Image (cartoon, rainbow, N blue to C red):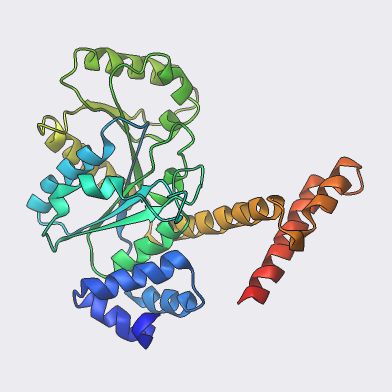
Length: 322
């Protein structure tokens, strides 16, 4: 870590309210540097099980604007908020493009809100695995609630269900056949469905279409709430905050903090395993990926055996690089 600050010292500064120290902790966790392990260990005694609300949905639905409106409501209720906005990765630097952060004006000049943009790094599930680690940093720094917003690229953004305690799926009116495409993705993970831009004439029709799509799902437990909001005017935002608070309270009563953290840990391991295999298949000479592919195609080994071999070689290469 920069400034040669020991993890315990840096964490103590963050707990005392030093935002620069917290930002440095988050950067270390996001980068996964060699000093990350000591920091993760230092965080553990300070974790109390912070609640996480996930926001996702197709692009253009107004997710960031709605999250910005919700920030105002929860801040008025006295909650300290942490916001993780996962933005598309820059093709040049690999960093986040910061589009979501620009739209969250409610966080400006408010020490009770900490907004951090993360790059998606191409993860198709809409999240970066580092988001799960960074939740622990906000927990240790005594924030009350984490708002986690995904990239917004389409129906594949279902990773948020593994990280957030409840999921809010935000759509815009006029989806039409797009609702049918969502049935196998976003609708499956929604605890709350929001039709934003509710002042449009076709908002009610979209809500009815969503209700019909949900009624056709088999094996469903509790059907998600369907609400309408207009984030730009605040219409329906307080009702959404109240409904979300109620669902969150129920979820937290049904699970322990350890169980929720274990689920996020599982997500980290699974995503990084997938990323390691993807990196191996992209042509790194150290992985012998071409030979393994040919072995699978010729029947000399199974695809599962090849995947295990790629993971083993990824681990060896990673250790050598450090």
